[in-house]
Length: 573
Ligand code: C2E
Ligand code: MG
Ligand code: MG
Image (tube, rainbow, N blue to C red; front, side, top):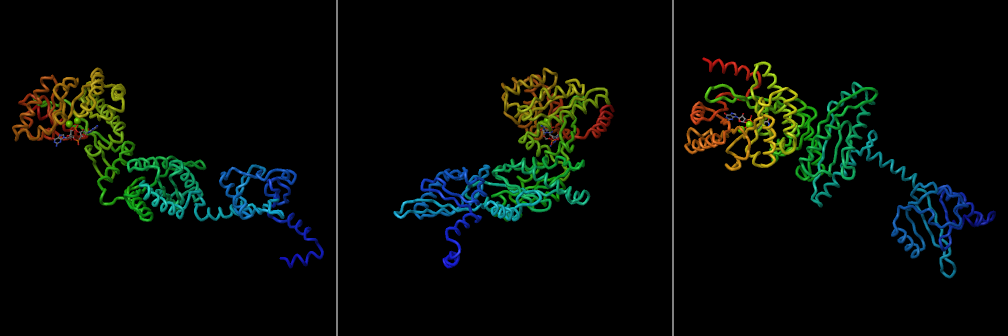
């Protein structure tokens, strides 16, 4: 270097050369005095910052300051400068047009002969382009070009980091693997551009469902997506979230005047229950997704370890229940109630049946409690009431008289919905007399919340709808409480009927309940009569009505009609 200069100085003075360098280098140069007042800048300075020479001179060097660094950053910078006479690093500064940019700076301190600071020289270049370039490389490596979502490598890193984080914090998280059903069909029939549009739209929808601070959505490739969900901690809530996702995915896709509906199969694995290793969890979410696929389209499946198969079934039922109403999988069966004296039919009880597409008939004993926990019993109960009213109106037309239908109503409906209003509007809609419908409330329902329930029962009776206390004897009503309830029908639980003919204690209890009902002027129905002996014994106790397999099992409406015709033939013989 020295050598070069000494050669050149034969024709040019060193000062001239330095001025050339100052004027033509790409590096911005700014010279200030010891107070930070700018004395000189070069053209590259103006190029980078947007400030012309005249605009810069006389200003203080902090004219470029952005808000990107806190006070301690500058304190450290000045501290290092004063100690070492130079500082090198990256600073976010602000251009004249307000744009913030990253510059790599080298600041040197110039001292006079007595060692006092006389000048600062700052040299810098703009790193924005470089950064843009490396961002682009980063983008290619970690993001999906089509949808802008993160890709498989990035989500794998995030899962690993989340595992570590959750091991320390004790939190849990879920992985939801989502695979579109029959997406290939769209690509094949509509072309790839159309398929791409759907994938983009879907990505936006998925992003809108998650908490962007905590959750991540990645496209693994093709029509496969992975969601990392930390914002939801419990399994039930994840099941609900998965259902929400299904709904969001199911909204129609409209492009180029065409409409498409798609569905997805979802597999869920949870940390730490289903695994404590990122790769294992991703594998298990994948296995769960395949299980969902094999159940048919539009299904959600949790990873099943043998341990929690019981909970799995519950959760699966909860998920499937949400579709059951829409897909018309419910029906009502009707079980006759018989007048024990005349053998005539006095009414029927409506009992709900769920025909599950894969699991077959699921008993109300299994699903009603789940429907209650999730409040799904409210729409399901409304459906049952409407269906019963529709049926009652139809029978009215066919038979010329009304065959009363008793409908079971859950405590959740009583607590959280307007049962009275619902019944009233159904009666109106089907133009039915209130005596065509009866309502059954279990004894425990009535006991749970006596004062509110009493008010509802009164409203119903005011309307002319009879209310029965169901499964009587299994709750703990005292005689005093029983008197407060304005119910007019008491259904004796089948537990007392069952052993009545073998066990004198059960017989005594049954007799006492019958007498209790009589003394309160209630209409009595014995449930679960399975033998002629039981029917006879109850008849001799003056229990008014009986219901049970001995007379008839619950039947669909067609079978009931056939049964009715046979029954009347028999009793008229
Ligand atoms: P429940 O209201 O006490 O209904 C009587 C249950 O006893 C019915 O069971 C019926 O099939 C059964 N049963 C009738 N006769 C006999 C018999 O002789 N022997 C035996 N062992 N059982 C008999 P199901 O249909 O399985 O219903 C079970 C429970 O589910 C019902 O008990 C009721 O509490 C509830 N449920 C049914 N449908 C509905 C509904 O639409 N809404 C609500 N909230 N609950 C319902
Ligand atoms: Mg009942
Ligand atoms: Mg009952």
